[in-house]
Image (cartoon, rainbow, N blue to C red; front, side):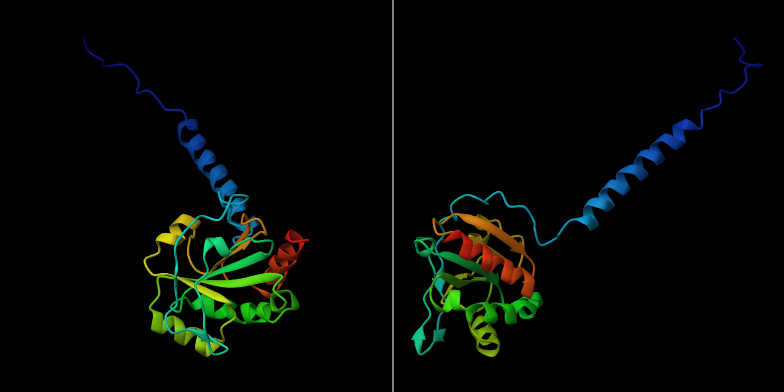
Length: 198
């Protein structure tokens, strides 16, 4: 049977336009979400839960006021006082940027009087490099735990460095800041820490 005389079937232009409209709408929604949120406020499934139990070693050779600086343990967290835990590494450029904020935090009356503890969580670093980093920029931490292989950081849900956690007086994670601390974000964490132990 011959098909001579049958006109070719024309496709509707909607078949091309509808996917383009859908793609454009999804792109618009994605861009709004990307630029309207605060990148430092990455949600964590651990907020409100006890800090994960991990074992960290002390940073070998690190001293403060002539005394060895101990490692912090999860058992040290809580005990009626808030703790700010800063995840850092010597190889992390943003860690250098935020370090003056940590030094300033360590000099506040709340930290000086022991109402709030400030501890370091050294991530995938060489001991000598971490000591040199803290020696050059100042050591704001009362304790520094070393996570040489990064396994503890996985348990804590660390995305990268720097990150800062706020632990309440009951040992639960109250807040998490991703990226370098600014003067404003450091003061916000300190205020929240003080409110948590009243």
